[in-house]
Image (cartoon, rainbow, N blue to C red; front, side, top):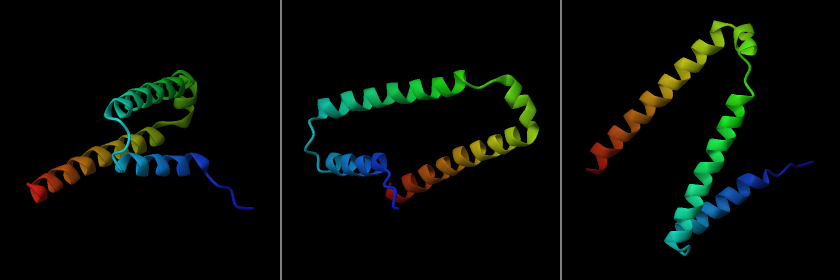
Length: 89
């Protein structure tokens, strides 16, 4: 049975709608603020449900992996931004 990720389809549809520039800017701004608030709430919920005991039990290797991935994302993002800004002027 094919499982359809409806949230992904809705995301693509809304991104396409936003690209058409038919949504009033005030509504887009309000939705972005709501999106930011909901993301902050989700991240806080994840953090509040994390137990230090679980982190200690996992050991140092997952933390080192997380730090390495974080550094790669930051440096990779910076490289892409720098490259695009130089390419596009």
